[in-house]
Length: 273
Length: 283
Image 1 (cartoon, each protein chain N blue to C red):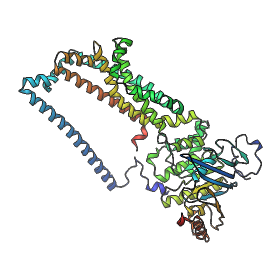
Image 2: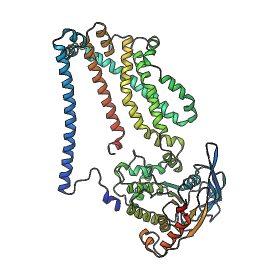
Image 3: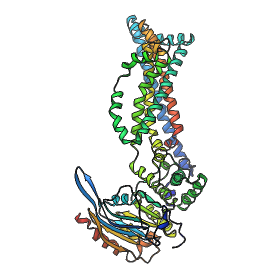
């Protein structure tokens, strides 16, 4: 283990050493739609190792968001086990950051105020919270925009603020649900690169849910392809690209990239869905 | 930075003269449009008053039935100089403000706290609807019996006219908070109270202020209906007395004061809103 900020596992004394941050075993989840039981997640197993970026792609409506909400403890699974750092936890896991396509910034708070939200909730002293938030905003290129209200920021900047709000809590695992999907292409590549750089330099783990195959291949160490509902793991690809893995443009230009994209595209079987 | 290049801060100094000129021209055009609206409103009002004056100038019966702007103005001057205009407006203003404040505080507190329990809100929902559908005027006789003929009964009437609307608008605001936003707060480790204080309350402000603007008028109606039932002063009293004596221009004069009071209170609510929600000016 390198010089990572120790994960904030609640009472983590007995956590098995070296256990991966996240293990999902045979998780299933169904919904009740007007008395009919609709299985969303069939039987899903996956794990996320320390410092690893894993992307999950799947056909639309395959229950990716249900999976994420289950992992976050916002809804509970019908069957199976979810272990964070080797332990089963009921409710919200500690040390997990969560980010969606919607930036969910609070309009009445400035960029700085939004970033401070998590620290404030945890009772970090205000001056300390402010200082740490400024540092993260600066790292994401938002120096000078701390006092701006979200309505005066562009979509890309708002999503950077949302990323800062997630990173300032120093989560050891980030769960990202299509966080870059609403951004234009150039902004997307730049934010993806920044995210990869910040995450890899602090050896945090990322589970990225996306429908964008190119995004998945360029940013991730591993791509998990899900099937249609009821969702199972259909295929897993270990992505080995020769390029600098924090540069999304280089990743897209490196040999092998197109091949991965093609194979995953074929797996998704989009035409027949 | 890609994003900052496309981003133009609201208060950015214009970097080149042509941009500054364009901005100035844009502002001038907007000011002209506003001036035109104001002018049209003034012209409409002036035309209406002129028509009214003309129709009643040569017809004594019409002048008796409808008053005339000049007679109304005359009454306003007399009432202002003998002090009754100020006294009545002040009394009604105080009743309205107190009823407005009490009704909104109680209504908003209940409405927001109902967010806490889906169960409680479902239990009381039909009762709220039932209470909300009672015409407040129907309660006036009982209110007089309970609270007497003085200030208290007017405040009670005014409060009752406000409280249900305040409750419903604030509750609507509270339960309308984005579910994803609540989930985000939960993943940041927020307790239910923290979610309430840091998310639900500020997010409901927009609806609460919509309610405040709406209830200014209701509070005034409550106060005036209270004065109609039994009173010795206030604009409602003045209207009722002048009406019973068939002094129609005086009724209108008191009505003008009532409208002015309503406009003033609405204006003040708007000021407070801007003060409390500075981020809304930027959007």
